[in-house]
Amino acid sequence: MSIAQNQTPAQRANQRRVAFATIIGTTIEWYDFFVYATAAGLIFAELFFKPAGAQIGLLLSFASVGISFLFRPLGAFLAGHYGDKIGRRAMLVITLILMGAATTLIGVLPTYATAGVMAPIMLLLLRILQGISAGGEWGGAVLMAVEHAPKDRRGRAGAFPQLGVPLGMLLASGVMALMTGVISPGEQFLAWGWRVPFLLSIVLIVVGYVVRRAVDESPIFEEIAAKKQQTKVPVIELFRKHWLLVILAALVFAGNNAAGYMTTGGFLQAYTTNPEGPIGFERTDVLVAVSFAAAMWFIFTLLSGYLADTIGRKRTYQIGFTSQALCVFPLFWLINTASLPMLYLAFALFAIGLGLAYGPQAALYSELFPASVRFSGVSISYALGAIIGGAFAPMIATWLVQATGTTTAVSAYLLVMTLVSLTAVSMLRDRKGIDLSINNQAEQEIGATIFDKRRPALESPAVPVK
Image 1 (spheres, helix red, strand yellow):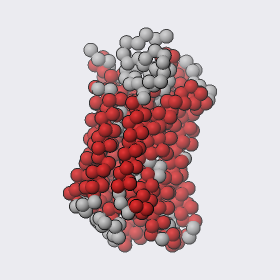
Image 2 (cartoon, rainbow, N blue to C red; image 1 turned 60 degrees about the vertical axis):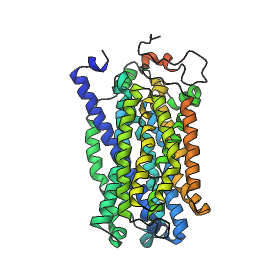
Image 3 (tube, one colour; image 1 turned 135 degrees about the vertical axis):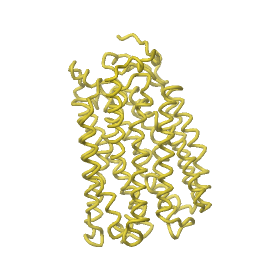
Image 4 (cartoon, rainbow, N blue to C red; image 1 turned 90 degrees about the horizontal axis):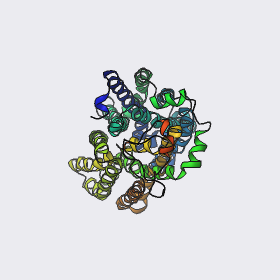
């Protein structure tokens, strides 16, 4: 009989609350993040960077998307340090409030026409706060999900906070589509309609706060706190002992993040709606197509959580990255037909690899790092992977198209990033089923990579505790 079957009704009810809290919280966080990225691709160049001209303004707009990634490590360092010292739940509430406040304030910013150069400066400062929040939020959410779960269900439990990304994207693109196509089309959207999706964040903050405050602290952290085994400076301990794991884990995420930000970062929205470009779709049509892509991404992210528990985290990743590599060229071949049905097909095919190579990440990362530095390890690896992969992917893609006049270079860039990640995940051992508790700290530090010549990773649930 599995561990999951031996659980009490109270334990199963608590895990459902944790799953609900993590998915609601991450959906709100990523809604805030993607609303900005969508607006950057559609209208921020005109509202905040217009004096730079159309092309340079669009590059600056995408650079403002990327700059927040540079501050993700700061959020990861801070949240990881305090998350390993004072708990996972407290950091989840703090990061949620920070993200929501920054997003709401963007909704009331003056534009360049009103405030001059101070407008883009204030926009960048608030985007930086979003980056700090995003850097700290993910680690806490996945650890709450994975550390509450029985060892035979960590993959699917860890997939729930991952679902917040496609759900946040679905919500952001859906609200933007509603504003551009129904409530404030045309000039009204530029005048005031774009502000509404940002202002809605204040409602979402209240919902997320109530939900997250209602869940119990991670049992792993409670055990660490009870035994007073918190590490004094987790980040130093992490890089002293586990620097190679941090690098490989970051590279695993980079390829998926670079591909994901082709849609979530606003590049494809800008490319397909540019009236002077080869496609020229209406904004609302593209936003609805992006919502469809988010729904497909959601389905395959959920599926990958179950696959990770069945065939392993590593193999699921390898299938996902292979699918992603096969789709990077067809993605633009289909889009460049300027056919709306082909746009939907392109997004659907691309979402398969995105989901399969994203769902297992929470379980894989959590099982890589020992309990005492786990929050720091997963948060910093995620933040560094986001910088390498997604930070400036939309800006790089825009520059490649402007420089070469073709999307082939963008596909080649995505292929390289995908192959780097496929190589990195193949260098890690699959540690499915390893004991995550502080009692097993010594075992957790053994055999995490193929370079480690010590005893192989412990994949059996029946592991003697040293």
